[in-house]
Length: 313
Image (tube, rainbow, N blue to C red; front, side):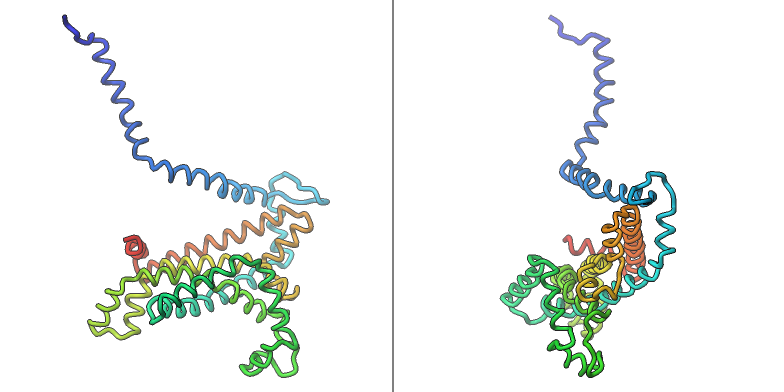
């Protein structure tokens, strides 16, 4: 008894399989956990940010939002003198980030490649995580007493010429805001830099020394290029946090050092939500431009992708 397939089925079956095979192959190549994570991230983070951008083109009249697209809110930002606030925010954020980078890189280099024991490393890293368990306001308010007119740090500041004898201290000044930010954001810069330096292979450092390179040449030719991913991550985390900081300017600046975050808080209190959205969008644009600038500058000093491949290996 013959079991041959009819001619019509024999012609249809291969064509239908050929049509399904590319889809099945494509679905088989998709990394579903990663795809689901990216989809959730897009819905939870990107979509609200796009909503903020759209909201910035509305305006507020008599405490009510007028949902008619216009550029009035954006024009009011620059007409109200906030351009000076933007420049002050960028200046303080860049200064704090630069100071943090120098301090954190030197400290991380000592901790990762110095003669620190494992116990010291473990205790130091544990201490660096302590600030994340405390509210920033609680950690900042103590500096008001230390930086004030009768604070114990004033003789030190007089000794280094930071303040004049008999002055009222550095509280309610940009110096106090810088000081508070440097203290608060040090773990944010130090931890990614330390991880990147720790992953630099000691054999590469030993080879550089064996070839006659000086410590400075080993630092600039081996350690810094291979730790660039951690440096860039630390710079972005610190710079973003400094631009969005509002506790230090409020508690240590005393209303005399207004930054963009204070303008956002003021707009929120006055129910001017389109202004709040426009200021938030402006911060995102500035950070986006800075990230692009860092990437372009990083390419001039080396291949960033090769550094990431070394860290991944």
